[in-house]
Length: 159
Image 1 (tube, one colour):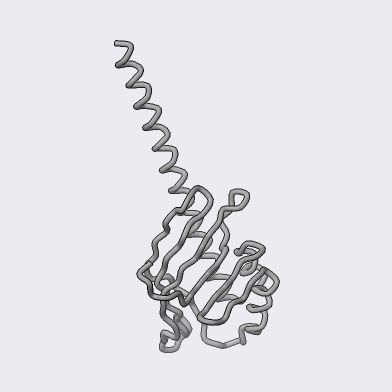
Image 2 (tube, helix red, strand yellow):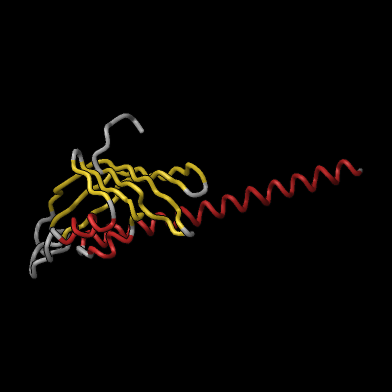
């Protein structure tokens, strides 16, 4: 009887630990979804401050051979796009499919296919101006998920 109670207690403890881990991972997935939403909105509205704040201090954006590293450089990259001109067609960066894999409790990799659409909802015929695949390395810093690196043109190695 003692062995049965001990086994039951061990089973209950393991079940609670697993349920807690799953709940934590669900909360992390939701936080990562929000991070990527804020990324797209900051980019589409050219909010350089908000854009840079989504990266770690040494965060990096890579597109092919171009790499921009550090919050100050990331902020400048968006500022250099210039203001959105009145009456210009809106631009939307969209995630088509995505998958987040957790490396450990504070590191994740976000895989995505993306589309960049110009003129969506702006009264003109929308057009796709970019499409591709991206890989983001994310890190949880002080309880908040941030982008350590964003690569919008990774090699097609199957990962």
